Amino acid sequence: MIGWLAGAVLAPAAAVTPFRVGERLHYRMFWGPVIIGHATLEVRGIEPVDGHDCYHLVAEARTVGIGRMFFKLDSATESWLDVEGLFSRRFQQNRQEGRRHKRAVTDFDYARGETITRNLLSGREKRSPLAQPVQDIISALYYVRSQPLALHQPAQFTVNAGDKNWTVTFRPDKRQKFEFRAVGEVDALRIEPTPTIQFVAENKGRLWFWVSDDRRKLPLQVKSTMTLGTATLMLHHVDHVAPARLTQAPGAVVAAR
Image (cartoon, rainbow, N blue to C red; front, side, top):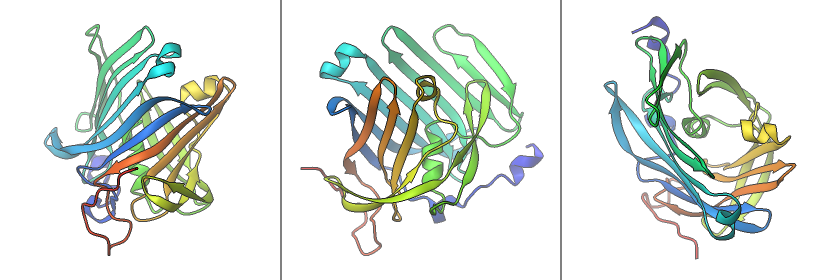
């Protein structure tokens, strides 16, 4: 194993992760005031990758109704987040946007120091150097949740996007109070990651997400303002989240009504 990985444990997972196996978060997708689809985030289980236990994270999104008339989206994105070090070991996409279809899997081979991406439609393979622990676009969210977030305190991590690595800075810049049917009234921290995702940048937009300012650090809302309009992802229903306080019963299910 290459030298840097021996010291790459970013956080002792058992002590800091606010998520657990079985957590499933349901979201509604809005374009302006109109519901255009649904999405979920799930900690599906713990699975081995290269002999290391990993959280199997699954993000799914689908447009429905009028949203499907304007933009067809069917997406299943999976990530395998190292339980001990909280960095990505594998990332897989099966995504259809309109007529475009992408199926690919990326393995982060830390022992050999390389990233291997295979196009599952064409069979083509790309390799690039891997010099440090990285996140993918799904594991990054769970990594942020594991961190001791504080107002105006910036932090950085590296995100892999295809054959490129990006240094992403996140800094909670505002505390706001929200009320969601799924979790009731809750304080939240607003975070704007920089740089933002490519689609938002191409449309001269900005993107923020809000996480609950409690021990769960639930992703409550994502909002992007662009020249095309405003897109919002809003928490609607939660299953098997960790309790907000230690006095609550573990394993409780909070459902929207």
